[in-house]
Length: 81
Image (cartoon, rainbow, N blue to C red; front, top):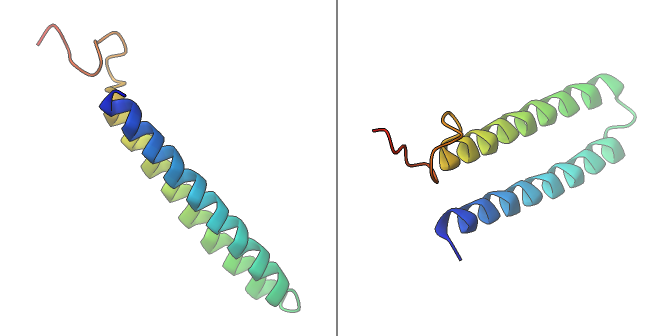
């Protein structure tokens, strides 16, 4: 298996793990803080910001892995350089 494919699979598994953890935390927040709506909303927003930051981080890693600034390069190697 090519190394960049292995790296993408690793990143996608991390994304899946983060999604599962975020889902469990969301369930726990709703379950235990449902009587305090303001606190529930703040906890959900903190979780949302952290999850979006993680998504951006994973997206940036994939962007760098495939060198997406030059889409016609061969596997991240620019033949013109």
